Image 1: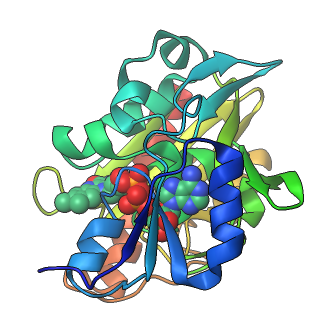
Image 2 (image 1 turned 180 degrees about the horizontal axis):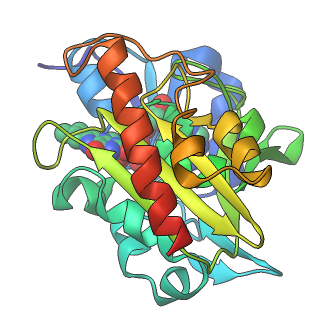
Length: 273
Ligand SMILES: Cc1cc2nc3c(=O)[nH]c(=O)nc-3n(C[C@H](O)[C@H](O)[C@H](O)COP(=O)(O)OP(=O)(O)OC[C@H]3O[C@@H](n4cnc5c(N)ncnc54)[C@H](O)[C@@H]3O)c2cc1C
């Protein structure tokens, strides 16, 4: 449980971080809250030659209002999202989902940017970004670029963020309507065996699925059915269409598909309340 040796860098600015990432290339990795990276390093599933600790880079931990969206700094902790009054007012579902991540220790250290960058299909908060069409703002050697959440995830733990890019902020459209996040776990404070998020945005309902494939997914068949006038029961019956859940220690494929339909119905009921 001791990580392989690595060089440690502690940049003071975003520019310095990007310069280090460019210089060190694929051998370097960013350390934010460390709640995913450090366990992987201890298990030797990751063995970066250099770790770039962004924990002291200023101005990356904030929540503020933009035009029609919240702007959230990459180092904003899950715990901040739970408590922030602006989040509570403008996107309460984000705070509700943050409350369901791991345990209090993890939520005090883990960051919004970190969980989005990690690309774990079992993570909770990416479901909010994917369902609400968030924009991920990254900075690299060529400057800033925006990645729509729909284009963020490529495969299992694989994102479209380049090795020399850093997430600096995330924009989440205001979503003050009803919504619900249903997370099924084997025990308290566990990863989602399956998670389903439903959010009412204007006249439409968006649905995102956790642990139902290699990436966080949108439940397109459900959204389409609802837009076409289907009932909640009819739409929820389609929840597993187009998904590719895997069998693991938590559940088999059929059980995940069953959970997905049941949780989708519950999340849709919450979003329709
Ligand atoms: C016991 C345990 C239980 C957990 N339970 C849950 C759970 O129930 N639900 C859940 O969703 N999560 C859970 N987590 C994970 C937790 O939410 C992590 O905080 C999160 O996945 C990663 O955030 P971090 O800030 O700790 O990132 P780190 O671990 O520091 O980094 C993770 C990855 O993201 C990259 N990265 C970090 N920040 C940036 C950035 N700004 N730009 C580009 N790349 C970046 C790093 O290089 C690394 O590859 C759990 C973790 C543990 C240890």
